[in-house]
Amino acid sequence: MGCQHSSVPEVPWEDVLEGLCTEEIGLAAVQRDGCALEDVPGGLDAAAEIYLAAVQQKEDVLQYVLKGLRTTEICLPAVQQNAHAQKYVPEGLHTKAICDAAVQQDVHALRNVPVGLAEAAEICLAAVQ
Image (cartoon, rainbow, N blue to C red; front, side, top):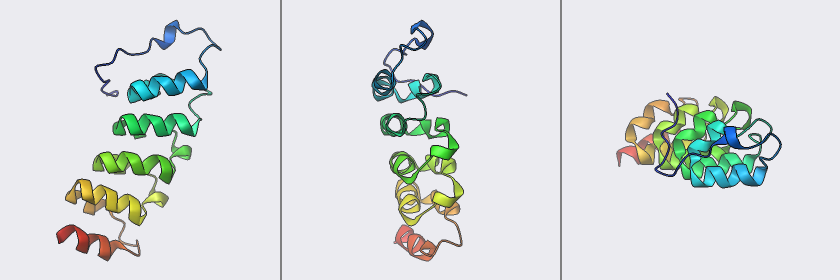
């Protein structure tokens, strides 16, 4: 299932000539509709600024961010908006900040807090208070 586009009309990437789509155009597209990230042509999608703008506009696009480019700076805003985005956060990035943000959105996100996380007990205590 693809991304649920906002009410803003989709950008018709197939109508954009090869080589004409710049990072500036890709950034403008995802700022308008985060789901446009699915359609940003190859080569542009590696721009961290585009990924960050996309997840700030629509948190459920985190799944379309290349796994190797999912950083705390990109994952945290998505999780702060929607705890379910936590499932797309790479295992090594389940930090206290990411887990706190998810649990604040949805207490059921506690099940995704790594047991080995040094602050796991602190996160659980904060969630039940």
